[in-house]
Length: 372
Image (cartoon, rainbow, N blue to C red):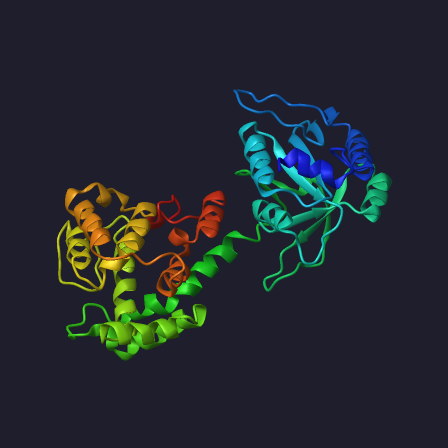
């Protein structure tokens, strides 16, 4: 079903409800009370500056000395492609997009969550009490609901357009509730691994990943992905070795790629290779082994999104990856080990969170981003 047809089916064949039209007119009227307001339009087509499809913002206006605004009043469940498309269009046009909801439902529809993500954990509502307060003050007001650390929202704050942060990429928000939360989430998934690699570097043990320092790291991965326990048992039955030890080796490979992408020299956590091409030599050697071969696709995926993606253009590594894929079936993204790697390195392997970090300019350099 096309988005327009789906939208019309919600309103008995019309593209909008009577309540939606009434709210658009109310918002336009309240904006007009601001002496700085210019060019107020309701449901008027805006052509793109360069090319492509234009948009029909619910309410468009300019506030002199502040910004150009598009208000989208969302009463029904928004469609994810439309949410993103509108956000991208208005960002390209230099227009600040504000999504207004009538109220917040629980559970929240996915489309509302998409908007919440784009607005950095801020949800804006315009209920009847807000409309009354706006009329009394003679300007457009709305309530801002900020995400709470453990789910839900904090007590709403009544704000105006002047209170918003408008110069932070394509997001419009009162308070950024996502960036630090994203960084904390990423750090929590690998802090015990980082501690283990930092505490026991360059060990000479024949099987270094069997040392106690790695037990808590393995337990943390199993906490996030309980299916690792059954996988470990299957690994023992199939390969006659320690699944936990092998998983530590796999994560050491990924850590080596990540830390070798921080701008300094290559840093390895599981071999004695040294020099300017130590990482390349290590990857070639590991991919020649039958235990790592099934993970060639995972390693290739990781490298592609990392700051060391250029290694994939090297003939030796390209050959090693290709031969590993031909030699043995590859694990998929639903395998417990892949899922655990996603939790340990969400900046690279978790598509949703990676895109969020790109949006808030927080993706680290080693993950192919620009942040320190």
